[in-house]
Figure (spheres, rainbow, N blue to C red):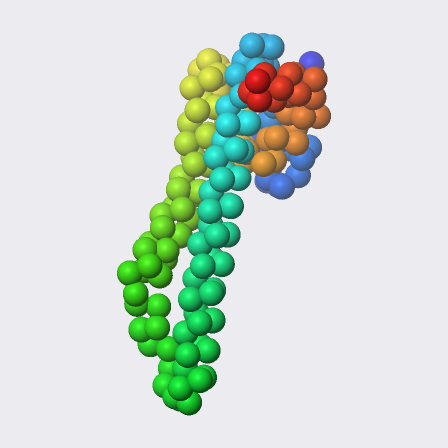
Length: 160
């Protein structure tokens, strides 16, 4: 029995029950479920790499800022740090951080588009009404609840 999604009801996208209902309304075959799991695992791996790189860049920028503050303190200057991060390396790090933030944002929409392409038009209509865009981290919980064994199999196959 498929769960009905009510387009008139407000949606709490952080509620795992919502995503379980979305997943059930997709009426996925086992093959589609496996494709969705592989897609989601790939997305999560990309997202994890972006978060790690953002952390490195923020640490680098924090070190540069700290170094600049220390230099000002040691020089006895009371000037503000205007221009202290204006070297080529810090500017490149700031630019890369901006690009990563944009990439992280657009990857969610790319993931949603990939999920839509995975589903036939009728299934898209059933599940997309109250779930646009898909939130990969929330969908992960629902998929693991519904198909843990398949999730583990796909994970193991990807690592081989």
